Amino acid sequence: MTPSGFLDLPYRLPFARYYQEFDAGFYVDFPKQLRLMGEWLQEHRCRTTLDIGAMTGGCIEYISRLGIRMDGVQFTEDVKRLAAARLRKAGVKSTLFVSPVHGPLRVPSTASYDGIVSLGWFNLPFERTFIRRYLDRIRALLAPGGVFLFDFFQFTDVKVAPTEAVTLGKDIVYVSHSELLGKVLRRYHLWILRKRRQMFAETSDLVDRRSADVRRLLAGAGLEVVKTKSLDLNYPREFWLARKIRSGRG
Image 1 (cartoon, one colour):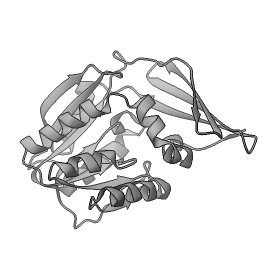
Image 2 (tube, rainbow, N blue to C red; image 1 turned 180 degrees about the horizontal axis):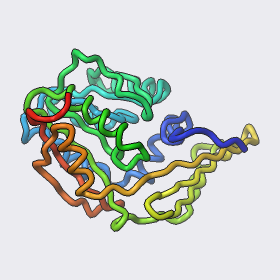
Image 3 (cartoon, rainbow, N blue to C red; image 1 turned 60 degrees about the vertical axis):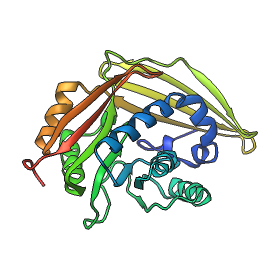
């Protein structure tokens, strides 16, 4: 059994190979949030957008069908290849970049977007200085008046999932267990590869983010919150839209 590094789990090949099973089991309410995302992007007349953490490309495909171009940032090369193949098959044009989740946002400085989307990012266990730099970079990529759409959850609303086991194909069993440790939601992951007779263990953390703290971080980067909605879905969360304003760093 080999423990691996920070936030490896969601972007590894077992996930990529069986993303449809993951979508069905763990993201059952995502289509509802996706529809709301599309409505907000249309409401703000966005024509070119970027999805940070584009995963399998489902968001890109949906938003593109609305007549809004969407590029994507992938956290690893393997998931980029998966998304690129899916988008080619769907006839969707999109430029995909690779930028590790724990590193600076690697998107060409010449790029400019009317809207940027990032889901799940605010609850990752980053230091405040890293978050500030990342938000500065997002603001720099936004056109004047551009908007940033994101979600987060507060631990007052968190639901700790029960221990679960999922069989993926004929060769992988995935077991997950979660526990709340103060302001940290720790998730334990066990992959059992039957054919290889191997097991791999990983942990990943999410941290509490309160609304007031999120507003302060955005304001410091020159992003003003203009629209919010509480989503009472499978995992209750806040879905917000912030607009680029003239003040701020970057």
